[in-house]
Image (cartoon, rainbow, N blue to C red; front, side, top):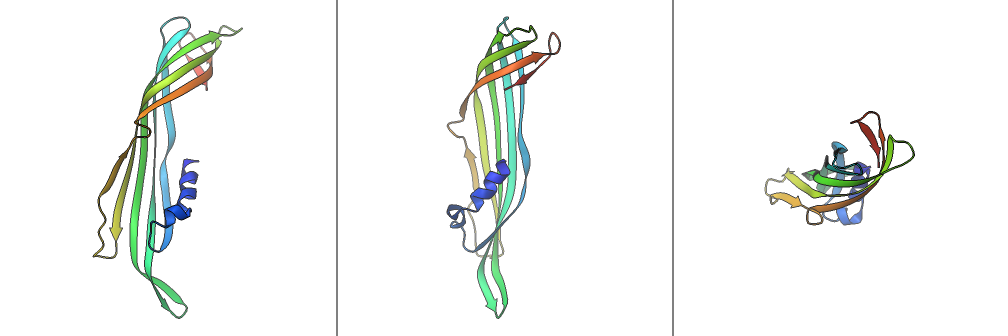
Length: 168
């Protein structure tokens, strides 16, 4: 889904007007969002957990400009290549309040994850035009301010005394 959103964004006029000529966007690669969570029970109805999540993606944008036309043949004189690399990593704590329901091995829980997120965007640039230079674009993005809050509502099913599975 996140790759499809970026593909759609690269088709907008807002994105396209940043470049000089005909665009080619390709080579979408990356790791989809992966999250690992764990919890330790402090009291009968209260637990504290941790959460670690990460994803990344990359894609290339080629900007073909200085169009040359010779009869039916159309070619470009110059090509600029932008290699975008985007990544996000989050780490947080998750206090949870557990409410047992009829079966002793199932409970509903409410929680609030609080943590930090680090987003980064790196753009590598190359051009066939030897006179064209591009400033180093290494950005550090933290949105908003690097802090996140994630309310949680879930159901947990125990398969043993210390092992269960959550559905959030």
